[in-house]
Image 1 (tube, rainbow, N blue to C red):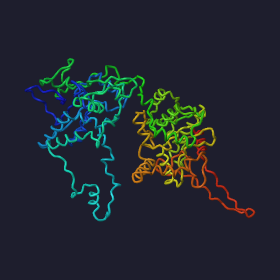
Image 2: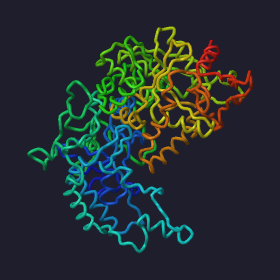
Image 3: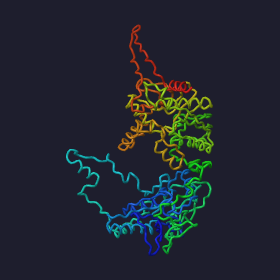
Image 4: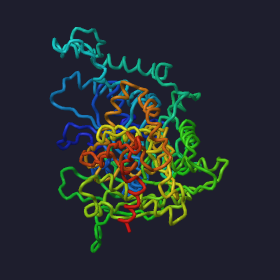
Length: 636
């Protein structure tokens, strides 16, 4: 009774049109009549994990016919579209499950398919709390299904004698050799059902997932009324209640990210039964709109999709001001993350009483993370300092920083948008002897930021580079330039009117990524046409360090100690000897992978004046501040 097969109904004794062997259906949660549905991707994941049945979660993007199958009206379709555009939470997109039946399937396969779907329809909801979902992609995965459990790394393989039988050695190491004893998978509908029942009994044991430690993503409260499926929190609440056998739903405050209490709908806004077969097998007609015939060629699209005469077919626009959740505006900062940033600020004296900070905000996860941490520290710090933000817009079609304006306005942070056609300027101003677009772009951006700081009265520029960036720059400089160099943690530019600091020195990139994801920060995607059109040197270095870290888990903590003499420098002047190099913020390699070359220092010459040895100092290479001055000259 919980299964709803989609498609035009067939009356008793009637004939059905020819169809493909694909069955589309939805499964009810069972909290009430008609109640909520189970998410199609959860059903597809359950069929795969328990029975090995390959099903697909089909979304309503298949056109007006798919929307008609789900009972979605014109108004509801427009509202759903606005919801997905504003929240980017694909898990809310309506859809249905699809399974295929074809001529190559045996009778046993058909029985397994039928038994699997019936079991999921009757018992599948009980496993909902053992799964979690991704708001942005709509994927559902078992909470223990992480890449570390199911991925086999080739770096773990140790073949003793590759010259003898490498394939056999590899199969043995992977545990898939023909002679090895492996647990046989259950075959047939009856054996699979027994295995499914056993999995259900053990689902919430101490060896699996404990309900007491359950935590799932929260959804946007503004569109609470569009929530058409049951959530894992509902089942966790049900199993801990006095009626664990009756599906229930939990209050809205537990599943929505909002300060206000949001009403939780008991029934789905989707109801396929409205236009599909009734209990007597007859097709219903809703609002005078009959079932469209599959054989008619004159089936009209939804009215909302057809522009009126004289109107341009333009996409619907939402003119409402964007709204932000509580987590987006006041994210909860984990103590370890806050502690690492606080330690870096303390170790290098990055912030002093009366400082006016300008955060270089690219819109990425790192700069947004450091901005929120500084705003939180500002409230509790014993000293007074100001925080503002600035974004450099290189005026490329790939980059759209304008959503940051509304976000910073909602945060109450002073914001500056600095625009220059940097990529176009590179075509005419870039030094042909140093054809590095990354280095040119970096200098131009620093020039714009420094100019803004001097004009507005800021004295500290805060950048969002983390420990991974420090390590990558260190490796790139050593490999391509033959120099020991990386970014500095806290330093004065040559004019000593602007100081640059990087509070994320001790923070790993994975920490900022997790912080941004958990709090749904409005991250602007990577956009540089030079760096992201294809994998470049920094990407290759990132992959190299990742592979090394797998074999040496303490790699980055070791590199942090190794680089300390380099990032602890407090001025932008070049250090002598092995520390010499390019401007400290420049990339170590060009966009084409070629090294950024520097002029070689002359070797110290010895001379004798009155029997005394005199060492002549080599000419000094232009430092980072002089590069910045040159950049400002170009910009002006």
